[in-house]
Image (cartoon, rainbow, N blue to C red; front, side, top):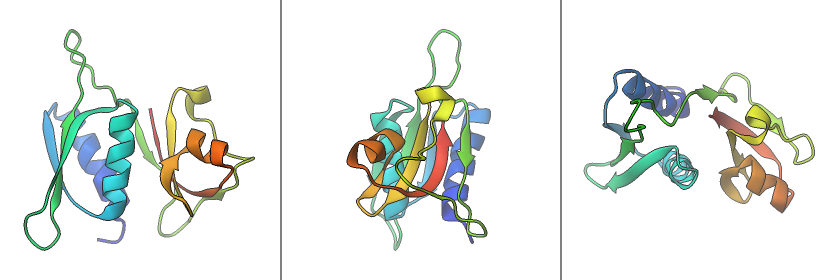
Length: 131
């Protein structure tokens, strides 16, 4: 697999399309940090890190509206790919849906959202957009 972040986003996207409650994804430190951000911002219901086998896995409980059965995540878009990395400074930081969405960045201070990166005045690689 050449792009584990794209695989992570695709597994979550496919689980949403199939209306699954839980999705299981192979773990890595970067994927764990992205999962924590999705949970803090309210896009997923819960998560659990399972330390079985050589790699471990992440179990993510997806969040649905109880009335309309609509998922909290509308779109997951991979921005920086292995073939074309996208970097930004804190002054040119993108605003996703005019501040309603979240851009996940990998910075020198760790993985964080666009708002946190702006506050800390650090730039980095734009991993994905979530809204």
